[in-house]
Image 1 (tube, each protein chain N blue to C red):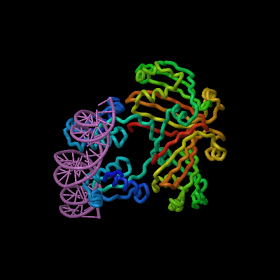
Image 2: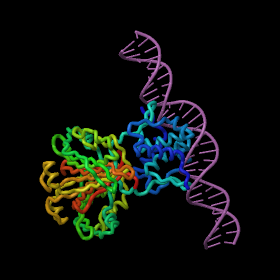
Image 3: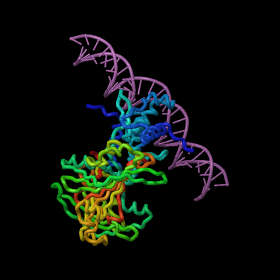
Image 4: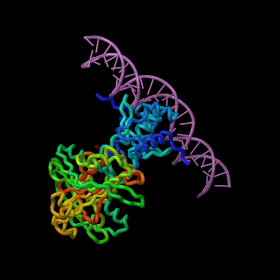
Length: 228
Length: 228
DNA sequence: TGAGCAAATATGTATAGACATTAATTGCGC
DNA sequence: GCGCAATTAATGTCTATACATATTTGCTCA
């Protein structure tokens, strides 16, 4: 068997009481000294369990007042924006990346002259075009990518493994495929595509900006909330 | 001023080193006893900082081996799935809900006979159709909604305020508008729409399941990661 | 009545030490 | 050399205690 640490057991029992609705938002949970007596352990052990729950946003703790089940989670879901190559391979499909163009352009965004690597290509799953990608990469922040071989693997896979970022924004929309992209994906002009535009920053600087257009019926994004 | 706790300071310093790229994925960070000496504190204090980082997925810790900066596996973003009515009003636009149909149907999902409230309607922003919605609500779990007036406010707004859930899944895709929905939204048949299908559960039971179709160029979903 | 202050209380932070667990490393025997 | 067992170095858990800090409660006095 596996010995579950006590603090983990305490955490799990309270968490499941909240999940099952036995404890409702706003409810007060027993104070540390009570739980300490209930489980026959030291206060630090209970504290570790409750701190973890507070850190995960499930409890709100106020000195002198007690610990309460946290209020309305602003319906926020977790969207795993994956590395396409890894995701497709993970599904057991055959993945291929086709580099269409790669060039260095000079950009003068914000008055700071800098070089940008511009990459365009197509992602294939099981031989069928899945997504068209246009990406700009800030060479000032990521000079090493100039050396990377982008004919074999897409820049996203390289970036995810090599470059940290502090902030990211994704805009998800549906659009009618523009002619050039429709042609690259082998679909009708004006057919619906799922568009994902992502920008990532490190501090104040943009690291990369990518626009992906997915063939509508071959891809969906999934966002979840809850145990998993 | 506010005195920042020591464990928090340690956590922040390591976190920012990772964010700034001074520590890269796979790098080993000093062992607890070293940090303990560096900061002149007890090991539990260092441990608390490192445990928090591990809990947040920024470190991976292995006994006997040490603590390492985690490989960014999938980039998880936070998608705020909004209550449409609140979101549109929040943008200063005029919101209107048009109930198209409302009926109780008998469903025998999983062999458990139960009643389901089926609701269809259209969301308008500033007088223009924004989204078509079809929703099923489990009356066994949410009997009170049978009394609610769904001609004035959409069921989503009522549910968000009255019903807790433990788990939710959103599937986001682009589709060509089916004729009936195209007509309701006043767009061309086959025009692209952004489709959002959401199911929410309480424990093992489905609370509600909704399919929303957004007019492509009037709506986008935004998912973020980072300070904000 | 009400304003302000003091006490009580629950959580927050930190320590020093003990023992458990895990896995990399070393070294022994063959 | 090779395989396996013993060692050892790292994190994981837990205790008992101490003092800090925030906030509610209630008391006192104008």
